[in-house]
Image (cartoon, rainbow over all chains, first blue to last red; front, top):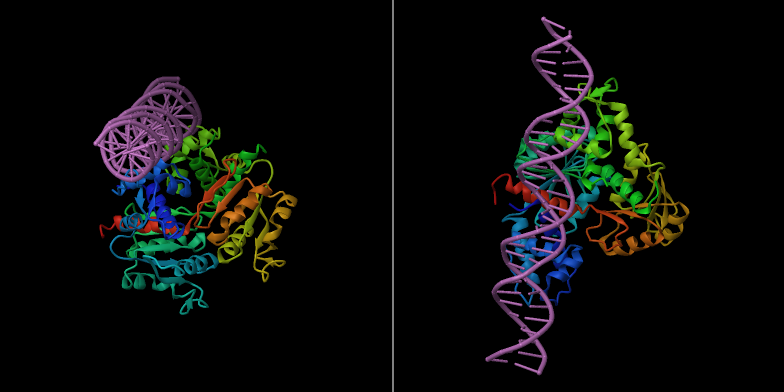
Length: 208
Length: 208
DNA sequence: CAGTTGTTGTGAAATAAATAACAGACGTAG
DNA sequence: CTACGTCTGTTATTTATTTCACAACAACTG
């Protein structure tokens, strides 16, 4: 079982390998990649150990090979099908960001309650009415959902998604969701993050 | 020194106390608040221990008093002044979200490079040209910044912010920033979060 | 007023995560 | 071919975080 934190770092390593390494570079040492990712070389090696990847002493890692290895762990055998609920500014930002990159993460449907949005294609993706969540999730075999609705609606939306078969939720509503244990939940509360940053920012200046 | 995780949970506890407790409720037991926050009662009590707050056995905690106590730790004596750089969809979403709530976090300036945005008031906040970062950050005594620019520009923007005196950064660009240790940095990479959710979603169904 | 029930605060134990340390492997220089 | 310096994989150690367990205490009951 690979830990939460390790998975997140692996995703970063792959991004660096694909986007931030000069295409001519074949080999890379752990301390090089570690420094780019702002982690210790020991941690990088340990993370690679978790996915069973081996480099060789004196030569380091093969860039393309490593990226592929990380991919085989992160991506699985087939692309993950993703839905997003709540096409406000945040929802649109995430959809258009994800559409812009080829990836094993496929945004295949979005949902909203506002009839000015439903039935249209927004940011390159069809927007359905929220009533259709069950229908579309099942039909499109969606397993992952992003929730960007107001906090009052989040729990109900999440329940419906889970009911329809979603097993992973990325929640941007600032409310803790109660879901069965078999569903993986990641919360990204903007306010909490900012309050945390503000707190530690204050600490690091000595101001009260 | 209060830990990272604890600060984040404290922020959640306060939100629950202020937004999700019936105003008539005076007392609250640890297991009640813990269940709302989806943490164990022991963890809640330990978090409160960290801020030196005491309830009483048999009566639990005083809702208003506890909220105030958490606030005195999280907020400090004066409001934190916040800037946001990058008024794309994501930037606008965050600004309008934060403007909508009274808070000790004051968004006082935003920045962009697009001359169709600069000089105007967007989502209730003045948008300056990125050239003015140093000037405005100093003048407005800004200590915290949110970075929502494309990944190519993020490092440069962060450097300028730090130079101008910012000590805490919330980074939404999918790139690790290299900053001096005295600056607190929190990364919120959307892709990494989604890849993580997709990974664990797959694990919890047994599909490969 | 003694007994019972249910709660808090906190030391101790358990678990998780990051760091350090090092044996063995590889490449290179001479 | 040998000696040396550098790097990897992995174990051991340290550090951080969470959970457990329980004494002390408040409220209620009869």
